[in-house]
Length: 296
Image (tube, rainbow, N blue to C red; front, side):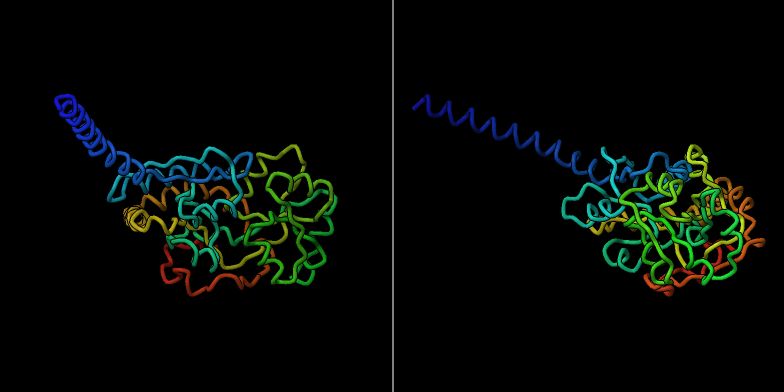
């Protein structure tokens, strides 16, 4: 009988200790998980906007009601895979920065403040030196239809170009596109003002040129998107973003990182070719807030 009592007492003490450990550690673990934002490490050699995005992210997170930390995923992934992870019940990604579409806005929670001020919809062309003379004769969308664009297969731009009856060749990932352009697999690589100069600098070995003749324009925006698993994160992030808009620090940061690219592009000296974007409801864009948009 004495042995039984001792056995029961030992087990009771063990249960109490386990409960105390769980009580003290579990909330901390949950709190840590809820304060961490996991970003996808995207499939690019060097992201030309990384410094801008990280500076902006830091600025916003300094102004959210709750303190958050961000962490890149261990492995690189394509945009499509990152979005899939955000829709899974136990996915590995909490937030992504990407171009908006109606479909993405249905699946995820958009923070409807354009990080790029709409520059993603202003596209200049990277070309091979071999077609420079031919490309300089383009004056209309009909002229452009004689040439083939190159894009990554899961980018929204593929559907936009095709909807405007512009031929497109795709690659399963980003980096091979420069080699494909150099080899003549397609004629031009439309890139936004927001991206192109950093990409040119990072891929000089391919000898591609920036066309000085045309610029494509279609309604578009780059948003932060949050997984539907974390609506409170989305609301906190929106509040933080609105604060940095109101105090002028967003505009200052945007100009610091993008003003030189805008100036070099000489938009007013180019032929503007307007495209429709049938995959984005223009009424979903915050167009009534003129301070959010770039005006050439």
